[in-house]
Image 1: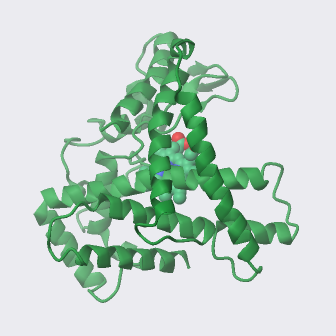
Image 2: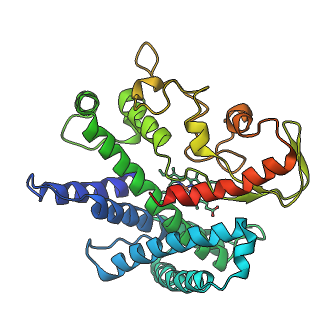
Length: 331
Ligand code: HEM
């Protein structure tokens, strides 16, 4: 069902692009609106007309929150900055409240409409489970569900839109790669329908392009901050409870020990001699760890960034990596 919803949003996007009739245009806002609509459909079974005022308000608030969160995050690392007067946290809380009001409104509307039939979105699934008195554990309640939906929007819009835009940019700059991808798509999918997940394994070259764009332009280059919940040891390093952790995704994706010519755009690095996809555990655009992708080799993630330095330097590095995250987000 989700795939059908995604395809119908994409058909609309392509119609909008066709309507430009070959004139030059900036696709970024169209792509952002499409991604936002997909998330909205999957979470609360709602979609907007492109150009709808509330729709653009969501995108605007989400941009605002992302910008403010970067600066607020910086203060989590450079603690002394917290002593300086600042309106960032206040502005962030205000933007979050505005956003939560929109999300709460959608959830309420969906819950009222849903008749316990086939679930069409995340909220339907939750509503049905509550209706069937399923045990959802101590952490699932109306508030956490609303925050989860909000985080789908916050975490999903920019990441996915920018990732798609990077693919567009790289293909425009490498027309021979674009032609090869076009041929593969024509061969596997044809021109009368959109690709589906079932086609994925038959389209290794297209997959390799996506992998290479994710490697070069991971939208969350320093992941999100995590804190050690308890004293622990990792690869011989002792890490006290409370240590801030940042997965240096950018570093892993650009490590010359792992990738030949890491700065070069070369999708074929993900293909074997038969043109089939080769999995590379150092491709970690969705980060690493228990909650996401465990497969990453510990060496790739940490070795280059935990050289044999005293503990305080390592700790400093962990903390200040977030600065780089904020820095890269600005580009
Ligand atoms: C190209 C697309 C995307 C990339 C590369 C990406 C990458 C990431 C990364 C690296 C993290 C941090 C993981 C961590 O350190 O724990 C993250 C967190 C997250 N992502 Fe994505 N993501 C993408 C799309 C999405 C989409 C479409 C959604 C939702 C619909 C989403 C929802 C989330 C959520 C809810 C979190 C957790 C945020 C938190 O812990 O505060 N992401 N993502």
